[in-house]
Image (tube, rainbow, N blue to C red; front, side, top):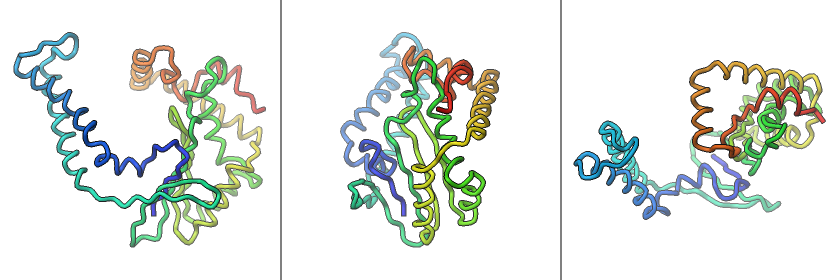
Length: 251
């Protein structure tokens, strides 16, 4: 069984599986533009400015368009039974049931908890630091939590992207109630130990220093700056050393 709670504003992993049938007209028009441009480039009818003048780029664009078109043809025939239900508390979620394996895979999305919502002035990196701390501190110590997850074969992961934060859970069906109870404790009743906070903060600083000498990461950061300018999406999730040194107090 796969479950996707409806807390991400109507955009989730499993709802997107039904996207092709509902969005055929716009999907086709989306594919049409690069396909037409690629054909015009190949036939010398159209010579646009900048990158599109490159013949190799035109061939690559044509190949990608054909690949998307073929994928669309196969996706149109897919029939996926996605069910939309609500809990007694009014929380909506989507799920797909698959017979055969006694497993539950669940992703909870927390809307507007991504790193673009970090205070820009002095707390960049706050969302990433917070998610790294979630599974480390509860009324039980972090090692006890990790041991309980390991004993039951439960996979628990917290992550963050630009817009949202996510909690991912994978467990045997027979352990679902136990796993949900443990995650509830982690999310709701989790006082952060100051020693753990310092460790995670230092780890994040180390990641920033490492990335500052990584050519791939530097290129990625530069591209974001070019594309997004001064918008929050231009910043890296890890934040900056200045923010971690001067800001982000435990309380």
